[in-house]
Amino acid sequence: MFNLRIKSDCSLLFSCNNNNLNSVCSIKSSNVSFHFPVHTVLVCSVYDFYPKQIKVIWFRDEQEVTSGVSSTGVMENGDWYYQIHSSLVYTPRNGEKISCVVEHASLKEPLRTYWGKYLSSDKEKIAIGASALILGLVFGLAGFIYYRNHTPGKPFKS
Image 1: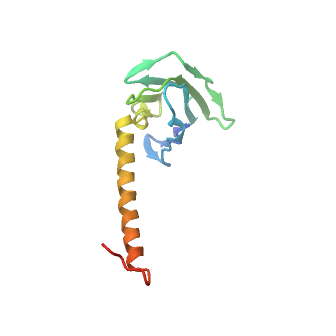
Image 2: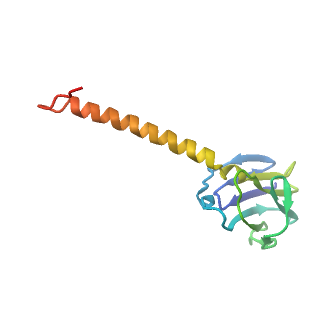
Image 3: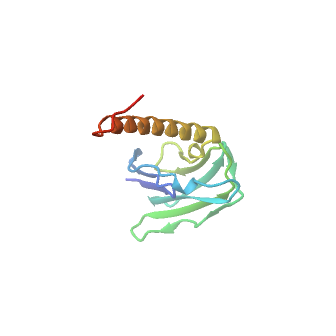
């Protein structure tokens, strides 16, 4: 039986047993909230794999990245399984796709984990903010009208 788990700082965790990939927790992208330009670090960790041979590759917009990449090398867990941690230091750009690719004998095809979709554009942020503001104003106005109509002795005058 082959066993492979991948965990990133974005709290993305996969478990791979006998080539069946199942997501076991959700993605939290709080560590990629930043103001441009800054350097940030993404970590791709692979746990509980056997055999020892493994390859971890970083991609930025489908192009392999070699600068800013560091790795711990394959480490023993002490239970006949292994783990490796690879990190990427980079300056984020709006709309780019960053991915970590793991190649291992237990996988039918390389496993790719994306972070780029969490680097939203300014237009998306403005649209979400405007929608929230409008929704807040609508509920605020409705609450005010309800309060004024249901307050004894103070009828609502239009």
